[in-house]
Image (cartoon, rainbow, N blue to C red; front, side):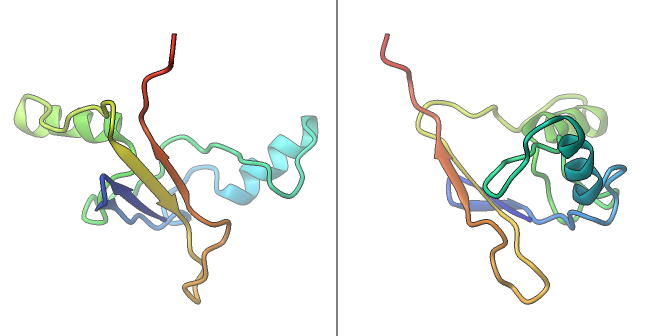
Length: 109
């Protein structure tokens, strides 16, 4: 998995290494009670590794670890105009589902 924030890579964890419930287990569990089919998106919660060198995919997790290590968080939460792009690749480098590429925008009220 690779996550970019405002065009800058912030995380590239191995999605299967340290996950308590891997994606196969999550999909199987969801399919027991939901109509899961091609195109369904299943959220996993935080995807990270015990070794933090690959970076982060969750701002709240990164801020928590910064607070533990340095006494205060330095990473800002996303704000209007910020973007995030998430994509997962297989072992051959092929995108599995395409990129999720979104920006934070204000709702018209």
